[in-house]
Length: 415
Image 1 (cartoon, one colour):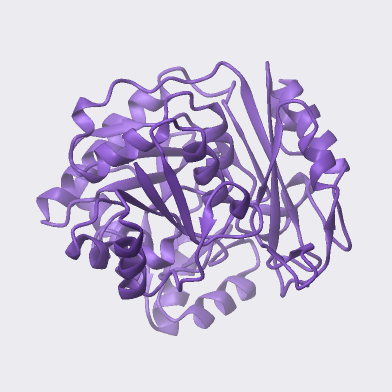
Image 2: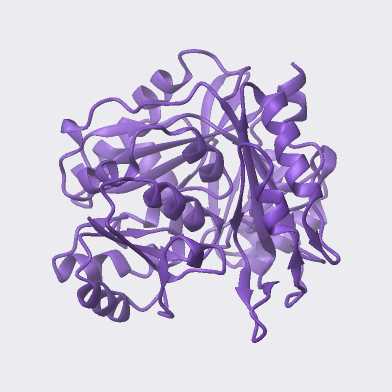
C-alpha cells in the first residue's frame, strides 16, 4: 500500500511513524512534512490547503490511501477534492468537518442526537454576549465559533476578559462551565461503524499546575488509571454512535476520526467539543500503545469496510508525551533556533522524539519552525516509568529559550 499523509506537525509524525512500522505500507509520503517526518517518509512541498494540488500529488504518487492530519485542510474541503478524483481518503468531507469548524453547528448536531453537552448560547452581537455572560455567571466559557488552532477558547472568572474575547471573535458560543477532569476519546468511523480508540488526557495550559494561557496542548498520557472501566462503552453509546448516526441521517456522513473532548462532571459525561481529526498531542500517546497495524484500519474506514475490522489490540504499557515549545509560545514564537541532542534523546530506552515545528536550515541543521517544536514520547510498564523515560529524553534536548511543563501525568502516576 502506498500512503500519503497530509500535514507537518507532531500528530502527522506520529501517524507516519506508525505507518512506517506497518508491513503493509510499501511507500510512505508526506506533504509538506517536517525535518523529523523526512526520516521515515518522502516529503513533498505542497500547500496542504490546496485540494487540487494535493489531488495532483496523490495522482502522481498513485497513492492507495490519503490520510489528512490537520483540521484546516478538512474544513477547506481537501478530502472532497481527493474523493472526486477517486482516492480513498481518511478524513471527513468539508460539510461533516463543520462538526469542528463551527461550534454552533456541533451544538445543533448534539441537540438533534440527544448527546449530553453544556447548555450554550450562540451570540453575534454585544447585547447577546452580555445576556449570555449574565445568564451563566463565572467561570465564563467563551468559544470562537470557527477554527482557532486550539486557542479560541477562554475560560475565566474575569467578566471583562470574557467579554473582550467574545467581541474580538465575532460569532461565539458562550456556555456553562463544566466541572471535573477532561478526557479525550478518539473513534475511527466509516460513517456507520464506530471503532473507539483508548482514552487519553492532555494538558492545555502552558505552565505547570494548569496555569498560564491556553495552548494547542503541552503533553498527554494514556491510559487513565482513574477513569471508570465502562467509560468507553458509555461514551460510545451516548456520544459517538449517536453523533455518527445523526450526521448520516442528515446526508453528510462523517468518515474519518471523530474526536470527543469530554468532561467527567458531577452529573455524568458531557461533551466539551468535537474535533474532526486526530488530536495533538493525544495521538502521540494513543498510537504509541496501538499494536494493531494502522494502515488497514484507516483504509477500511476510508472505503466503508470498518465492520470487517477486528477489535484493536493495545499494549498494556503506559505512554507519556511532553511537548517542548519555542520561546514565547503560545504568543508569537521565536523560530530558527538550532535544536541539539535529538540523537541522544532517541537513545533513551522506549523513547522517541516526534517533530512538530521543525525544518532543516541551509546548513542542514534541524531548527525550530513553530510554536510547539517537539513531542517527546516514551512508554513504560506504568505511567511513572513512562514519565521517567520521557523526561530523561527531554533533558537531553537543547533548544535556546524553550519551555515545557514538568508535571505531565504527575498526579495520575502517583495516584
